[in-house]
Length: 268
Image 1 (tube, rainbow, N blue to C red):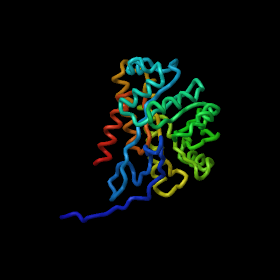
Image 2: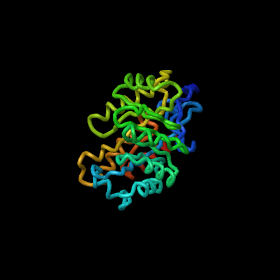
Image 3: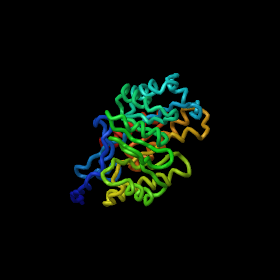
Image 4: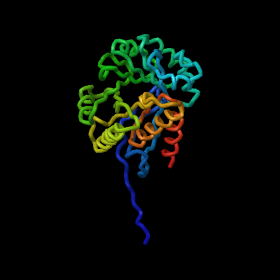
């Protein structure tokens, strides 16, 4: 028996976020992740590589993969561009916003910055690109300029409330927190899936691009970088399949696998 032809129309696109000088876009989903609906946009997630200006707590196992360039944040960011990352996440500890400016000028890649609120206020004055500002102790509430701010929470309801409190007309990225293999992964996946599902069902407070981090995979005490890289890659792929729009990774292996598999799934 021949199956009848069917047509499934996608939802209106979720919110999009233009980064850099508008040449990178996150979000805009019209369906559950990579689902083949008629005419639905299937955009692969953006992959951001981690950079920090303080290596005191950075695992040496990961540092060894960057050939010494991790000692200079600008060179480290350039190496991420050479590897093929879509953007750079800067864990800014020194409090110097000029590091952010120089990294953007050197790479021209989208930038996300985690820092204390007073430092983010200085970063917000950089006005020749659009970045993501990530507060260390909750959503950043200071001046934003042309930049987006990250809003997170432990449940979809909490994220919804915080997005509402951020105000209409603001560029927001929903921070889904950390993805790591182990007992907590299922909870992270469930949160990402619930946020996407509710957004597609017209929960306007959640119709924003989403992001997550897999960097904590490297804190599990693995014996070598290969095992840690595979662990992080699996977590990144789980986040991608759950509908995350921006992935922040620590290792080049995870970045490469997330980008390649994302492209293949988006082209199916």
